[in-house]
Length: 469
Image (cartoon, rainbow, N blue to C red):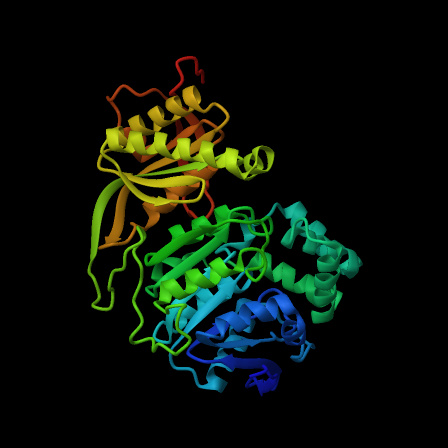
């Protein structure tokens, strides 16, 4: 059936355009930064992507207030206003249970909706998104982009397409420039990009119990992969998938992989086009690839652990420089070195994060020894690969079959992001617990890490014989 545009009204009288098509479990696609249903239904690439999804799901998407076929006289730009649109469409259609699929700017919106309506959202799917827009770019970059959009929407739109779809053909660039400019005017676009940078749902992540799939392309330049990784780390019931490619939009590049991951996650077999009720679909996959049934309400365990995050420096640039095959060989060597040291020091591999690892150890000393030996082995065997490591110790919350979460995990992740190439940064707590184990620590000042309220004292572990403070 050919998709059609319908209309509904918010309680304040604002008219919203929406479309419903397909068969099966409902999957709701909240409007991203800008939207235009008319373009979506005419663009062959976009339409082909959603028609594939519509073989297994009932697809619902809409134009947000200020864009596309919806009313455009918008003056309020807040998360609450975005939620108003989403809630209106869902309530109007009468959805009681569905999948929520938020991409890009719509990710924080999907997260916020899920927190308020966990009884309705059976599965949460997030792609190419983030929790805290304030850290997506430097302030001068944000201001420059907003000014460019306001001053010349044509040039601003072209600049955004170059970020969203690197290396696109001239035809594709022109098509997406036309889509963005047709979605809204310059002032509206500038206000919405400013809202993108202002959204912050970090404080909501730990309260989401809904099974969640987070997907992120490794070379995404619009929202870099570390933001997707940090988003996943903060959620208790999550699977994180790294996808190949550079384009920001899920319907471009290896779009089939995106659809496969969604179907696999919710338990819908791609070989069948018939509806599989959510009550019959398989439940949340575990981070190691198996499936675990969480419907019975598994209890939480609070335990002490030392959490380690590693992150490879400039992995995307390495792929560009060396080519896929050569870079992959190096990455596999890197992974083997890391896993050899994990085994040596009796650690646990919790997750592979595309270009890094999340690990857990029973003792801070074992974690630091492992980190030092990883750096030494990489320096000796693969000097072209540089990594940074963050380590923190404290209480973590764990559910059976899931990765630990909590403040301790957040801090370890932020320490890794704060570290420089070949550096190992540890928290004050880890440093004191490892005192007397023969490590050399160098104080690296105090820092207020992103997303962490308190100011922390940082220490570098000296692992090179020639290192100096």
